[in-house]
Image (cartoon, rainbow, N blue to C red; front, side, top):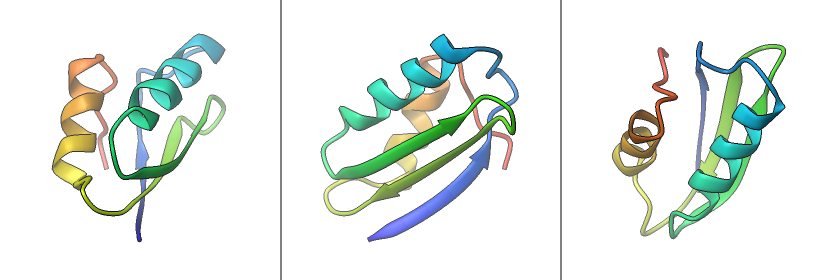
Length: 68
């Protein structure tokens, strides 16, 4: 299991966090997703077959690109 915390500056409301959590949770292998509106951080835990590249690509695709 791997875990990564990233900052997503585009988070501005509860709908943003919900969208991120739902979209990333649909990726096979993603175990948990927690997006926080106040800190604009997203914590993702995943295992096989998911990869960070897939997760990051999904964030970019849904217009919530991470900065770190």
